Each structure stands twice: as C-alpha cells, then as structure tokens.
Image 1: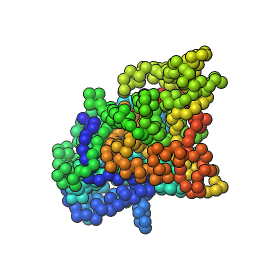
Image 2: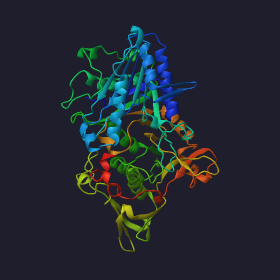
Image 3: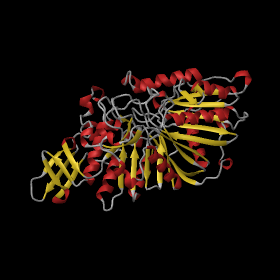
Image 4: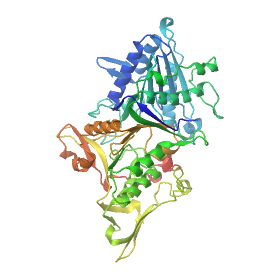
Length: 544
C-alpha cells in the first residue's frame, strides 16, 4: 500500500534552489555521514527517477563524483542504499531511443558501478541497489526523488524535483555555464529547480515511503515483478525486517505542520491521487493569491478548478510561471500550456478577439468554454483517448446581446483584453546579448502564504493521476519563508506587486539581472503535437 497522505510536523524546513546548491547540500550530507562513527542507525538512502554515477558534486575546493563519494561513505563503514526506476520493457520497445531507454541505460550503468560494493578494509560498509519496476498504468514511471541520511538515528530528508544527473547543474544566477539544462534558443543551458530540506517527524514519514519501495527487493508484491537487472542480490529475505528505521522519539520536536502526499497507480484499490486532491482543496480555499511554477500546467482538473475560482466573485490573484515557449522544444508542453492559458484567460478577461471580432464579456448573455466531458477528477473522458486527444476541439462560444453568436476553437483565438497571463523567468546577460530565458523544472505551488507545495509532482495529468510522486505541503510560517526565498530569487516583491514588477521586454531589466517576462498569446506554439511531430501520433495529453 502506498503512503497516500500523512499529516506530520517538521522541526525545520528549508527551500533549496537549483542544482549547484542541491548537489552541494548532498556533498555535505555524505561528508557528515562519512565522518561519523559507524552504527546501525547511521546510513544513506536515495530514491530517484534517474541517477548518473558520474554526476559531479562540488563543494569548493573539493570536486568529486557521486560514485566516489558514495564509495567513500561505504569505506567509512556505513550502509548506502539506492532505489532507481527501471522502465518497463514495453516502454523501451515502444519508445526506442527515447527517454525511457536513456534513463534505463543510465540507471543500469549506475547499478553496475555501485551495486554490491563492499567497503574497504572490512569496514562493514556496503552499497546496495534496487532497480525498481513500477507497475502502474501503461507508460507510467516512479518519479519520486528522495535523499535520506541518518546519523546516530537523527534523520534528515531532501525531496523535490531535481534528479541526480548533469542536466540539473545550474547556479542561482542561471548563468548557463555548467553544460546542464535546456540548450535550445533562447534557453542557454539553464534550468531552475526546487528542493525541500526537512527533518523531525516529517523526515520519518518520507522514510516510510522509501522503505515501502525498498521492500520490493525482498518480497513479491506485484504479479509482474518488482525488480529489474542490476538489483543487488539478497541471501535472506527476512533481512528487510531488520532494516534500520528512524524513530520519531529520536527526532527533534516538530514545529511546522507538514502533509506528505503521494500519487500512485500501482494498485487499483490502493491508488493515490492525494496530491491532486490537496491542490484542489487549496485552490478552493485561497483568498489572496495562488502561484504555480513548472514546465507544464495542464492537468484538466486543476485548470477547471482555477477557472471556477476566477469566474466566482472576489477571485484570488493567479500567477503561473512556465518556461518561455521555444521552437526547438521536443515536448508538447508549450502547446498544452497554451490550452490552459486560453481557458484561464477566458475565465477572467474583459474581452476576447476571434474571427476578426472583439467582444466584451459584459455585453454577452452567454460566455462559455466547451470541453470534452470531465467525468470525474481522475479520468477526463473516453474522448481524450479516441478524439480530441490534444483538446484541439475544445472551443469558446459567446452570445452578444445585440449581435451574432461568436464561436471558435481555442486554437484560433486572436487576443484577450485583461485576465490571467502566464509568465516566464528571464535573465539579461549583458547590454549586447539577447535575453536568456530560464527553463523551469521546478514543481512548486503557493497559496496565500499559508501553504507551500514542493516535491516531484508536475502539474500535469500523469503526475496528478498515475505516476509515482511525492510532494510536501508546508503550512504556516514555513510557507511564507519559502515564498520569500523564491520571490527574492526572481527579484520580485510580493504577489500583489508581481505583475507590476514583471516586464514586457528583457531590455527593461538591468544587466546581469534575473526577472519575469509577461507572456502573450503570440508566444505560444499552437500546432497540434501529433501534427507537428509524428512521434506523438499515438499519444495524447494524458501522457504528459
């Protein structure tokens, strides 16, 4: 049974932004374990979608690979345990040469390099690996990202959006000088991401989810298998019962309310869509502002809930950050972000232009977005897989009181006046350079300075419904601190001042300064993905 959701408390929470800081934090954590006296309650546990054994960890003046550092921890007499996603064979066969196969090869090589390692000089340390098979819906993955380290029973955790791979290397200034990130113009090898560090009882809850997954190494919990090639063999299945487990009584007292929530489709009766449910709850309760950032904002349920709030009296301010759309994007994210943008703008704008006509909302007796049936929160409808797979037939209709009805597909809307806009982070390198748009890989949401959400779950259908995900909902002062840290990162002030601080052109920013750009309709790619790229001929919006 998956974790689903659990109310707990953290002693402390801290937002970590971007790869340089995250990988430095991991370096320090491994250093602390390495220098500790060996004991059963001192160990390192990792669980990631992708782990590159050659990933560089830097903490000046030291530069060391992840594999070297993990072996050093084992040589010092400590147990190191890794869980990595093992993509399904069918996935690899269908997507030959694509993402699943690349991740499989990367993780398998890491397993071969590290699995079964025994610490030098009879230290008692070791490295064990589970290549985990995720038996969720077809095409799904286990996308959770966790670092756990315990020193004499005192447990710490990192959860978020960053994998242990070179792609995620970037600094907080997003200078694009680490050969990571997205390289297409105008992105310039940048990537923005977020991680939450927490300890206290909340870290124990995260470890409970890690242990649930680690159990697959010992017992048959799924009809189609638990583990893939590269998994470290075991001699005694009962060893699972003797695995060290952090105890709540040994942790610092919790001071900040936290809910740890998951998505999982591994067991139909035990399915979890609690991240989505909690986000819907926060959208409905928000009074002042709602903020989302990620490379995709497309889950139909979240979009529908936001649109409902925007149509209601006294709606909260809505801020959504996505990467700047770009021509070389190999994924359909820009298209899907446009569909969401159109629906949210129509729920909040003063007027719309389509088919050469501009119509004001206040002059209409009917103003409606027409969609495929959204039967319930976790299944859009049969038409999502048979017709209207990319929501290309979703349309808008309005009836002016003194004029002809106006109706057109969302893809043919020509403009909006007022209403919600999407934004992108940008950096102005110098006075002669073009802008550098900053790619967002973060999965972070904020509600009224009351709740902050940080984790592995994208705001897409697959992350809300069927991938294996884990996110933390931080309440109270911790949420406010997270918002302040994030806004400083973008050189923005408060939610109320966000649009005033945003710019229409990167030239409005000071040199070597990060800021936020307002996106307009013309920024977005509105070509249907299956028409733009044959690779998506048999896909639909639920795959992303």
